[in-house]
Length: 88
Image 1 (cartoon, one colour):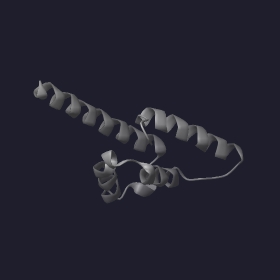
Image 2 (spheres, one colour; image 1 turned 180 degrees about the vertical axis):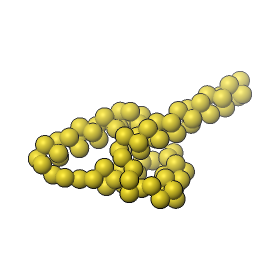
Image 3 (cartoon, helix red, strand yellow; image 1 turned 45 degrees about the vertical axis):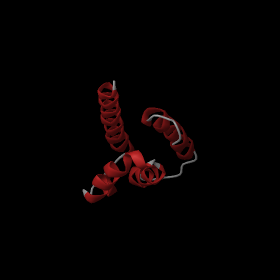
């Protein structure tokens, strides 16, 4: 994922998925969601574990996954801001 935000990363991913679907390839969203989770940085490890433990992995759509990841990213960003406020 590099330095991309979840929004930037997901936009690139959806572009790739749409290209694949143009060739009439059928893929379940849950399979894409699994592949996304494999490629995420350690920042999202706890969220990924929670999703896997919830047993909803097989029915999780890409949109739902990205929504959950964006929420995690926002919470992490807020925590980082709070920590830097206390440092000064």
